Picture 1 (cartoon, rainbow, N blue to C red):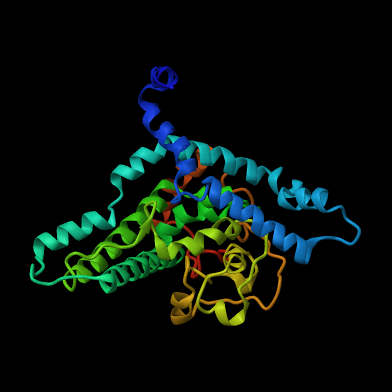
Picture 2 (cartoon, one colour; picture 1 turned 90 degrees about the vertical axis):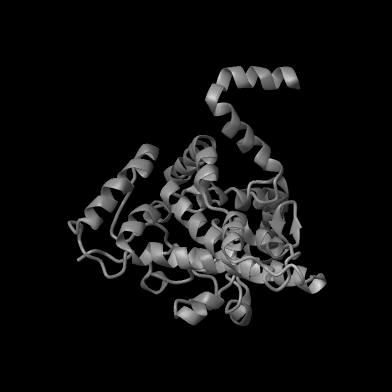
Amino acid sequence: MHGLADTARQFLGAYYPPARDFFWSIFALTERTTAVWIACYALLTLLVYARNERKPGEKFLAGFRRYLFPKEVYAHPSARADFVYFAVEKILFFAALETLAVSGDLVTVRLLQWFPVPSTLAGGWWATALMTLAAFLAFDLGAFVWHFLTHRVQVLWAFHRVHHSAEVLTPISNYREHPVDSLGRALVQGASVGAAQAAVLHLAPWARPLEVCGLNAVYLPFFVFSNARHSHVWVGFGRFWSHVFNSPAQHQCHHGTAPEHIDVNYGLVLSLWDWLAGTLYVPQGKEEVRYGLVGEQQPFPTVLSMYVRPFHDAWLRLTKRAAHERYPLSVAP
């Protein structure tokens, strides 16, 4: 094993650490590509197929295989671009983003240096529960705020539109995200989580969030459905629970180009933020959703253009030379 690692290190040189982290991430619960979450997605797809999608007289295993990997989705040029983009981003940009991103723990430490906590307070199970819930809510709210801003602020939309340019959705489409977009979200979430943790520590200095392999325990149920969010598998939560939790079907609608799908469902786990902001959309049943950018076809013809063109578009929007759009996903006048 050590000999193989030494050979890889000599061959890859400076790229060895991010490449190593990429391949080892298959075992991390915090990655949607880990084996356990892929298995959950396969099981979820199996249940949806057996209940809603199996055709009369169709052989179960053959039909399920076709439903799990539909050729029209996975052979689409957009899906192939996602696979290449995924490999490039995870290997080349993983280490850089990890270095630049501001973690919630770092913000917490800084805030506690400025506002020390009393040493006489103690904690208990309630402190762990409070810290876990506070960190979860802050992380989810930070994701909502950043996502909302990327659709409403022209300069930010120039980068986020890379994600929305996918014309079909697979679980790997989740990673079609410009590094600037990823970094911005990490900064906002890091700041919000750090502030929430610092506030809780003023009540219970020994409080720590309950985590499972580095993942906030409240997030575990979300990861069961996470890969279905970017997929052809329609999973709804019903009208009531869709006002609380953002279902995979709701996020698929978020990627849609129909008028009713524009600028809705920004939430990550919770739909409460959308409900409060007036951006909640709950589908009444299964909908045929068309993906991509309204009024544009293949704005990013190559993987390189996904990285480079957003800077050009952002500069045009910053200097007000781009066509003004009230809603970034709408057709420009």
